[in-house]
Amino acid sequence: MAKAPVLTPQAEDFPRWYQDLINKAELADNGPVRGTMVIRPYGYSLWERMQQEMDARIKKAGAQNAYFPMFIPQSYLTKEAEHVEGFAPELAVVTHGGGKELDEPVVVRPTSETIINEYFSKWVQSHRDLPLLINQWANVVRWELRPRVFLRTTEFLWQEGHTAHATYEDARAYASRIHTDVYGDFMTNVLGIDVVLGRKTARERFAGAINTLTLEGMMGDGKALQMGTSHELGQNFAKAFNTTYQLQGAEREYVWQTSWGVSTRMVGGLIMSHGDDSGLRVPPRLAAVQVVVLAIKGDDAVLAKVREIGAQLEAAGVRVVVDDRTDTPFGRRAVDWELKGVPLRIEVGPRDLENGTAMLVRRIAGGKEPVATDSLATLVPGILEEDQALLLRQSRERREARTVDVASIEEAVEAAATGWGRISWADLGPEGEAKLAEQGVSVRCIVAADGSVPATDDQDGNIAIVARAY
Image 1: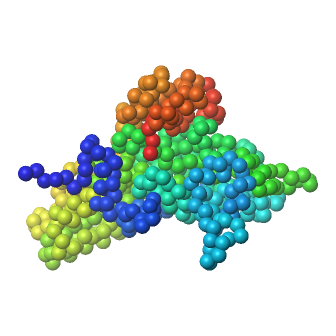
Image 2 (image 1 turned 180 degrees about the vertical axis):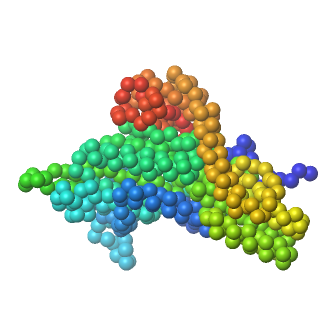
């Protein structure tokens, strides 16, 4: 009788595979309130590493971290009409506190444009106060009707950047810098996901923005996931909150603004982009645990050797865990680490000691081979970089293989059944986009003919990327 698989195979039921993996790899659980989630330690370690990598890039771009309250007076949201209209269905509103009805209802933070602008209007007085570049790591609440762990939850974790600039050109350049140098670099070179950088259509644009830049990743089932966005807000919020600065004379001018964010949705993207039927595959540059050294048996000499190897790898700059829990069967431990997607396993037993070797198991590239223990500290860093590059290459190859050029709405819908379609935006237009939406297909972004980010929606030669999306 064949042994039942640990996970539902992707080809059989991709959504079930995704949920199985989250459970079996101990990434998260559903919270007690519908749409919330409990992120377990291993899942949170992935988010922590994402935070660290992102935070370094954000600070390099000149932004400083700050924190703003999660409770926002409801009146703040009504100041920018398009913004409140866009978020109204998702708002969680508090009407009572301390056993009494509040004088004014407060909204649980869905995003912080409004409350941050209230303070920007106080902090910005002169052109010398600009640019003002602020980032916040926080949680937000958006009442989700169709929750899915990491992808769509009522409460999720994220970073949100908010900036104010003296000119439109300055703000536009900064939104683009975040899009490419922060998000694009991180997702490509750390997450190993070959994202497409483009601009959103007016239909898909952030509520209150004049332009939204997006990063779209193709998941293992061919669907698209919006991995992050960077918005040009123009002067919409500046006018609503009277955020102005004084020029050289007495004249005052409204600031130009941006906002940008990524969230724990990236953990879901990581799972669906790189995972396979054996579990997660974590890119080495992201992994909180790059190598696990396993003792096959509780022999004193074996235990001493795995700890020695662990110390040598740590000294070589590798993030390593020594698994010497020999009271738990070796096979179970090996499967658990495979599910968690740790890039490399180094397995040591009595026979390996006799041969002066260890068994090196590669989770990403696959395969295993005996390696001399005294060469591990030299070999491992290079192998990790090879496997990092392999994940990115596989991501790119999947996207290219499952993206086709189409010439009609019917062909676009057909392409979106298994992957992405590319269609001339001039031919599709807003009317065609609306017809696609009726069939569950959306324009994920617009790109220029050469694949770059176009300056405008109607730039000659623009191509619309269409897909079904999470």
